[in-house]
Length: 153
Picture 1: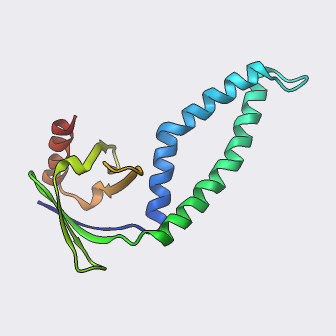
Picture 2: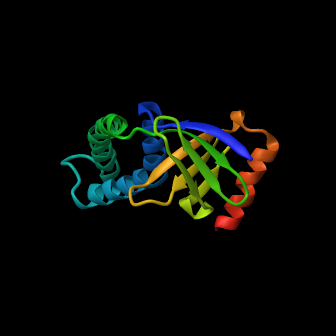
């Protein structure tokens, strides 16, 4: 069994937004700006340079929006819970409410393991991710997430 305290604050929400953006959206914007650079090059500049300028411009707009969105969401959401993971279920004991929830592993849409963290993407309408640093887990706890990832695919 794994027991972790999970808090949704500005830092955690921004980290999750950056994770999603770098994993999925950035490639879409890069391809879009490359296409746009070739279709509408800036006078006197090569299509690649034009695409890089467009890409930089889009990022100058998107990164502050990510920041503002994370700030707004952090004020709105009030998640502070001790979450227990085991082979069969996930138990959420809310610290700021008198509420305990039981979820099965279908609550987790995706489990991603990288060298620093375990990312759990929740299976809900608005994509939300939880990062658990591997430094807070022992080898058997990491193995549980690896097994559940294989079962979840």
